[in-house]
Image (cartoon, rainbow, N blue to C red; front, side, top):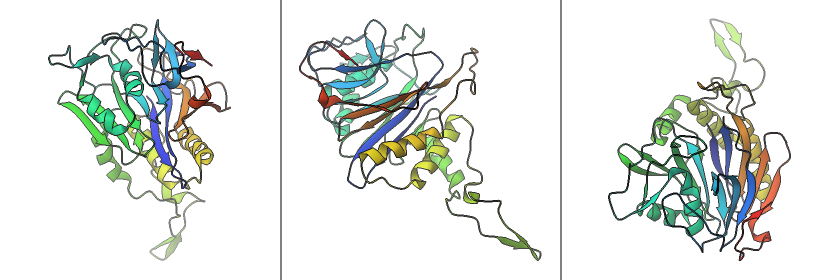
Length: 315
């Protein structure tokens, strides 16, 4: 599960937000990674010097993050891509091997923009590597955005690497992004305006109350339905004037796909729910988040912290 969006404001600020929907209790910590904090990877060499970045992190011996923002305003998020993700067994070329769950950290630590991330994906090989606390290789795809408002979706499938421009600014889970783009055609009649009364055989019929233009908007928790509902809510929402308004707008948009505990139960009989929602403002280097057990939004600005240290900062 998981849903992500990008937004922009009239004062040219940009945002990447996501829900973290998962059935394993992550219990993440808010962590800032200064420039000289050692980053360890399962397959690649460790990085002793890198760009500073921050995000909610899971400590599994070393830290793993599913989304974050770096000091140059590059943001990224990993979302589940079950049944579609396909990774190499090992690298057969002169490429750096990266585990799927380490892609976000690898990119935020070394690159400043979406264009640089595009190039980097041709220089690495994402290979099968189980995430030990899950006991499986996490099937993932990724979304990145930068302070210029550029955004891409990266998917690695059986037929190879796909890098798509994130023109709609929405991503959920399987199927692949091109499939979701095609599925949008089934819902192009959705409209925030009201349906006009219609006369049939001399009898006038009026819609019930407000919202008649949204009739047919899906409300279930499957990835295709969350994609359509989030896209509709995004394009229908009033454009924000500034970053603060944009975060609030993102909160309301993603509230539409927030999963309460108990609404989705997996085949393993575990509860899949929205554990946190994060909102990253590229230009401000700000990471906002809200946990499942609180409606309060917490703001962390990366630039408020000492980025030259060699120890991670746990907030």
